[in-house]
Image 1: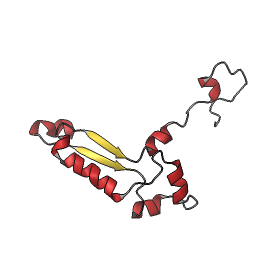
Image 2 (image 1 turned 60 degrees about the horizontal axis):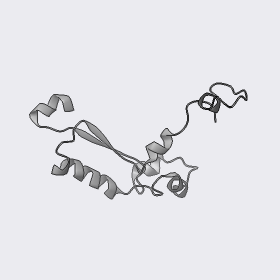
Image 3 (image 1 turned 45 degrees about the vertical axis):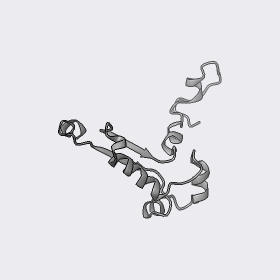
Length: 109
């Protein structure tokens, strides 16, 4: 859409929220056996988001401050996606060839 509408000076962006406390989504999507405190400890910013965090991101995208931003998704998640992306997809033997101990390919780390 950004490619199609850009020539008409229409910017197309999106906001992807992470765990936003005190919302219906947080209450419904959080695993029942995981506390809010546990989620907070695991977050790089050490807190869940606030509704205000999403409001500010949306205001930025709607303002002149972002007048050269189009075709992007603004991830507003306190770094949660970065933390999850560091889960290694390969066993250590693939990443560390000097380790000669046998490991099954695809084994969980």
